[in-house]
Length: 421
Ligand code: PLP
Image 1 (tube, rainbow, N blue to C red):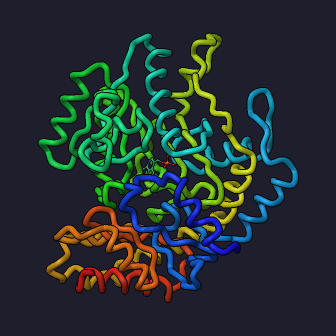
Image 2: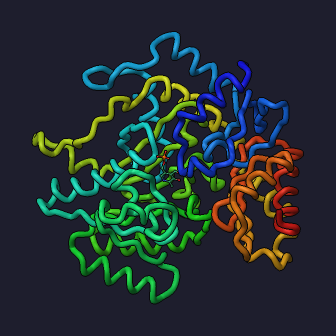
Image 3: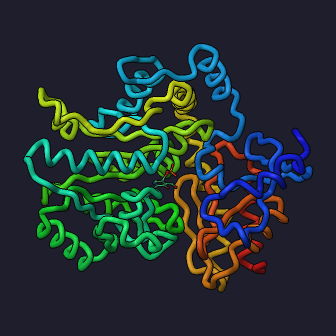
């Protein structure tokens, strides 16, 4: 690798980093290469990665099967537009996603980021009611603690008080962001809302785990309640499985783990194991039927340049092959048990208010706030890459992480919870 001084110092004057106050941001650590669950730093140090590149790297870095699929596809045809032309990787991937997702989610629309997959889900829901009943339903119900992306429409369905979305108030459509229906009063309030406002098109939720909101977990019963309330009110149910999809919860999809099928589902992140950007929005046969007519105005009005990117779809197909024999899902269930027992001591610590584990996700929520940037540096000094969300320290490791590497991650979290920075 070129000396980091050649690119890092110069680039830092020009690159604009995400979610970052560039003036006070501590310099990011320069990475030389990756392998499995390890990040090799330009300065020679080595970290165990507990984050998996924003939750995408479920197969570990540089997984040969994925790299080979990328190389083969690159040699044949990196990409060709889907307007008027067809290629095998996208068509094959659509067929396979329709097969492995629950219920009759049978139509797949490809995009290139999770936020856009959610935007497409919202557009599908709005147009569904136009096409079927000629009515205008443009409102959405989503949940406190939720996160669905950074574009204007997706920010409108995020928790309005968390993160940075409040800064864009005024530019965002007013939506209903309400409490999860966990208590009888909350269920009744949601039922009333859905039956009262006939402008509501859909309810949107991250099923089982609200990721960016702090790895908050809810019971499958919440999703069953939502399914019942949506059916009762004639409103669509959207599952944003951009984080929870592809085995993260211990089943291929959180919908399967909960036994609830949505009308529309969004996938992204781990779909390519983090190798290339790709996302997908799936619609049930019922929803798709509203678009399938002789009327050109009933067509879905969306078309990203890179929809169904061939290279990305080829990698995603190779990623699905890795799930084929069922061993990966078994591995996630084993990880759930390992994480649960390794983090159990945190439950008895005064500094900890909650320990949550589901599939390959573990979260330890601390009682007191701590300086995030200092905490990030502390974890790096412990040989780990762990990035807390608010007061919650979490892990979303690659499914094949070794026992030793997992022990380093959980050990660092226990030490952090006990001693602080
Ligand atoms: N939805 C959920 C549940 C997410 O976790 C994220 C990203 O963290 C998104 C949507 C947005 O995805 P992207 O960052 O690929 O636009």
